[in-house]
Image 1 (tube, rainbow, N blue to C red):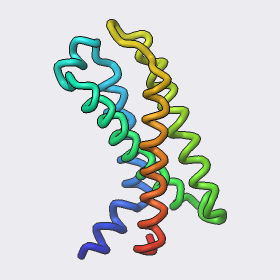
Image 2 (cartoon, rainbow, N blue to C red; image 1 turned 90 degrees about the vertical axis):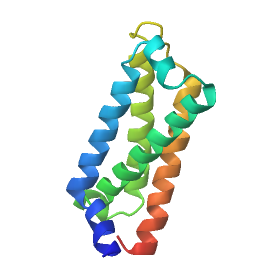
Image 3 (tube, rainbow, N blue to C red; image 1 turned 180 degrees about the horizontal axis):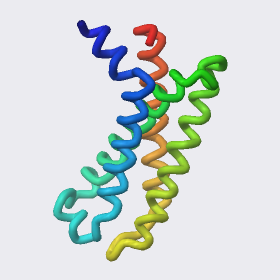
Length: 134
């Protein structure tokens, strides 16, 4: 039963859907003005933890999607590199997007936090992929 759920969550279509959903959630939160954002997370720790966890999930499910795509399936290391590249570029675009939102700013530190979260997600997926033979 658990293996069926794991295989379902890591199917190509579901992984892509979850990756796109996470991108939309990140965009939604980044599109909020500074005052709206502060109402949700008024402490620095919570905001940074939010960055880390959102991009952890994005790295995890995007690497799952790429690992099930035929082009990347032939070279097992390729999905890791392309997943990391996607996460970093999305983190950069997220911070650039915030430059155009009232009372928000782009922050290079957030790009690093996002990238670390993405790397942890990709690393976690890779370990679980080998453990569960996904």
